[in-house]
Amino acid sequence: MRRVLCDAILARLARILVRCERIVTFRKYLVLAGVAVFGSAGDSVLSYGMKQTGNISLHHLPSLILAVFNPWIALGIVLLLAFFAAHMNALSWADLTYVLPATSMGYVVLALVARFLLHEQISPLRWLGIALITGGVGFVAGGPVLTGHEHHEKVQPAETVGSAATTGAES
Amino acid sequence: MKTVYTWTAIALITLASVTGDIFLARAMKQVGDVHHLWRRVGLWTIVGRVLANPNFLFGVCAMATAFFSLLFALSWADVSLVTPAASSLTFIGTAFAAKIFLHEKVDRRRWIAALLVAAGVAMLAG
Image (cartoon, rainbow over all chains, first blue to last red; front, side, top):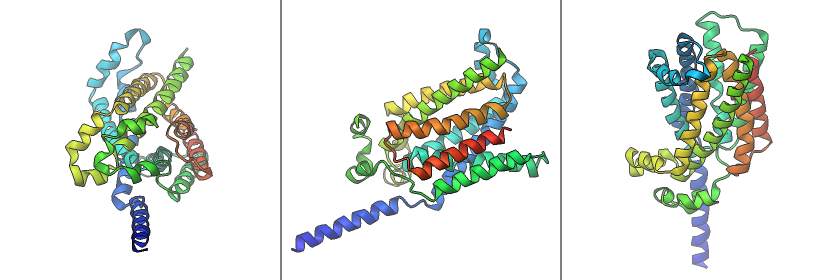
C-alpha cells in the first residue's frame, strides 16, 4: 500500500517536472527575440551587400564565393551565424512549428524601423500584413511549446540523450 | 529569363530551407534542451554533441544550399520579393513536413498561425 502511494507521488512529481520544463522563461523569450532580430538584420545587410556586388551570372558561379569578401556580406554572414545559434537553441526546447511563427516578429520590427526611423511610407496592405503576422504570433504563443516529444523527454535523462540519438532517428 | 531565374531560386530556397529545418530540429531534439545541458555538462560538450550529430550535418548542407540560392536570387531580384516569398512558402511547407517527419501535433491553432504569418509576410512585400 505504501509502495503504491510512493509510486503515485513520484509519478505526480515527474508530471509536474515535465510541465515546469515546458514553461517558457524570460531567457527563452530572449532567445526567440534574438532569432527574430538577427535573422531580419542579417537578411537586410546581405541584400545591401549583394546590390553592391551586382548581378551574378550562372556562367560565373565562382564569383558567388568571392562575394563573401564584401564587408557588408561578411557582416550579414556574422549576423546570420548569430541567428543560426539562437535558432538551434530554440529548436532544442520547442517545436519547429512553434519557433518559426513565433520568430516572425522580425518582419514586423523591420517594417516599424523603416516607418519610424527611416521615415518610409508603409501602405495599408503592409499594415494589414503586420497585423496578420502579429495575430499569427499571438495564436502560436498562446499554445504549448512542445507537443511531439513527450516520450523522449520522460525516458532519457539529458546527459544520455546524445548517446541515444540513433534510437530517436530511427523512430 | 530573369523571372524564371528568380522563381527557380525561390523554389530552391524553400525546398532547401524546409529540409534543413527538419534535419536541424531533429538533431536538436536528440541533443536535448540546451538550457539544462549547459548547467550540467557545459558549452563545449553541447557543441561536440551537436557537431557529431549526422542530422545536424545534413541540415547544415541543406541550409548552405538555401543560403547560396538566396545570394543568387538577391543578385537578380529585390529582397522585398525574394525573402517574403521564400519565407511564406517555407512556413506552409514546414508545417506539413514537421507533421509528417517530426510527428509534431500541428493542431488548428498552429495551422492558423502558419497561414496568418505566411499571408502577412506576403503582404509586407506588396
